[in-house]
Image 1 (cartoon, protein in one colour):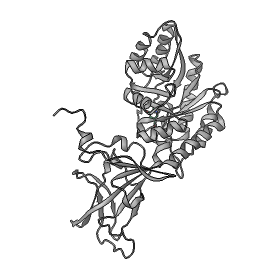
Image 2 (cartoon, rainbow, N blue to C red; image 1 turned 180 degrees about the vertical axis):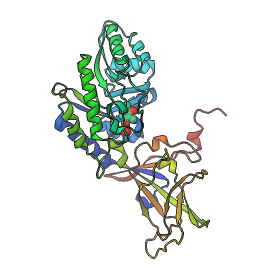
Image 3 (cartoon, rainbow, N blue to C red; image 1 turned 135 degrees about the vertical axis):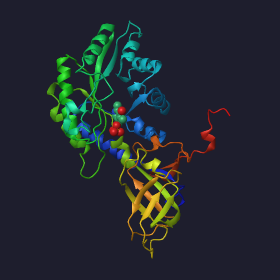
Length: 395
Ligand SMILES: *Cc1c(COP(=O)(O)O)cnc(C)c1O
């Protein structure tokens, strides 16, 4: 098939782009570190086809709930190739993952309590998440005066030291890893360097000897004017004390790997004129490309039904979505732009991160997803309809 017979609205995954991102990030890591792992952040885009691709390309699955943990197993990730983070671990999956040798980063007190129930005749290893307050560690990257975090144990409050002591007191559990994820708006290399310096100091003060250091995610993907994978990795290496450069370095990118690999296609279905504007209605929705409703513009492109002799619109054109929400408006074209008409398509690029997974089942259900690879364009997810919507309901 080709794009003329696509069902819209839909997402299209560019398989080669996703694989290239993984390879380039891996190549950058391997240029500096003997041991490194990419843990793909499942929450960023958990389309099963994407998970299978990242698995087949050597990534671990970074999961943050018992649902995501089970999903990773269902997709076929090796039990050891799971990085288990976040507050929503269940007791059963937490203990299972620790026993299986997954990389489990303890994030709260109840998990430390669960560790006490492990059999005493064996040794186990866990990682621990350190709390990162951006305002204190890297003020220039802070989004507000008090850019604190809900996650991990705080060194300043003394809870990190207590957590380490409590784990040691259990007797058969070693702290084998550190986890320091935080995501500043700036995504700057300098931020990661300041976090590394902060954590390295704590490792030394607490006399820890971890096997791995999980630096978290939050990196830019390849984009003009933004740091490259290599610049991030060079930045990590530069500030890591010599004694820690031999650790297994883990990164947990979501956005950096998946954002550029997806496009979204919508089609104009109608145009009305009033109040000095042309209201262009499409079959897509802002929920699908900007679920937080905070973007000002998009990487977009127009595919017109007939590009010759197109008239220009004397009125500004308000391009809006399918929903009944007044604010489901995507962008406005100024007067004298090409006049859009039914059948024209609008393509949004770089929309793979935090889009499909945040689409609500609101008015229109989950859209079609296609993949483009060496065999052409093919469907990998049907549009959801009323049959999927009623699953697990009694009525
Ligand atoms: C969300 C998250 C990531 C991925 O963040 P991106 O901005 O998509 O790279 C990595 N690690 C943890 C713990 C997260 O919560």
